Length: 254
Image (cartoon, rainbow, N blue to C red):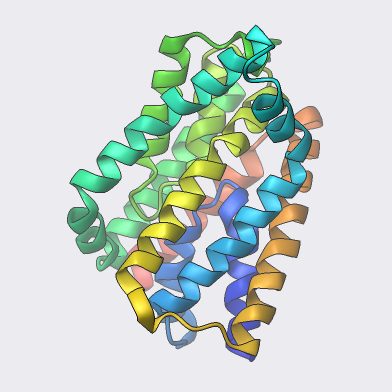
C-alpha cells in the first residue's frame, strides 16, 4: 500500500512539474533502496495523471472536440495539437528499445537532468511573449513537437522542454504551459496504452493500485495548477536549480 502511494505521489507531481517523471522513477529507487514500479503499476498510474490533465483542461478539450466542425479556431487548435504530437509518436515507435536501454544508465539520466536544468535557465534570457496557443503556426507546432519527442529520454522533462519551446516561439508562459499540457493528453494516453499492450492479460487492478492512481490524479491536478499559477508570475529557475542538483546527485552517487 505504502509503495503504491509513494509512486502515485512521484508520478503525479513529477509528470507535470518540469523535473522529469521518468528521471525520478529511475533514480529514486537507487537513492532510497526501493523497488522500482513494475510495468503494471506504471501503466495504471498513467491513468491517474491522464485523468488529472483532462479534468484540468476539460473546457479546452470540450471546445476543441465539440466545435471541431463549426469553429475554424477550434479546428486549427486541434490541428496544431495533432502536429505537435506526431514527432513523439514516431520517435516512440522507432526508438523504443533505445530509450529503454538509456533508462538503464543512471549516469545518462543524470546528464539528461542537468541538461533539463540548463534548458530551463533559457527562459530567464527571453522576454515574456504574449502569443496565444490558438495563434501557433505549423512550424511552431513542429518545433514544440520535436522538443516533446526529445523528452522521451529519461531525465529530459517533457513539460520543461515543451514550455521552454513555446516561450521561445513567442507564447506567453501561461499559454505555453496550457498548450504543453493539452498535448500531454495524447502523449500520456499513448504511453499508458503502450504499457497495457505489453502487459496484455497480465494487467490487474488491486486496491493498492487504485489508491496509487487516485493519489497520482490528485497530485497531478495540483501540480498543473501550481505550475500554471507560477508561470503567470514567476520564473522556472528554481526548477532549473533542482534539476541540476538532482542530476549531479545521480552523476556522483549512483
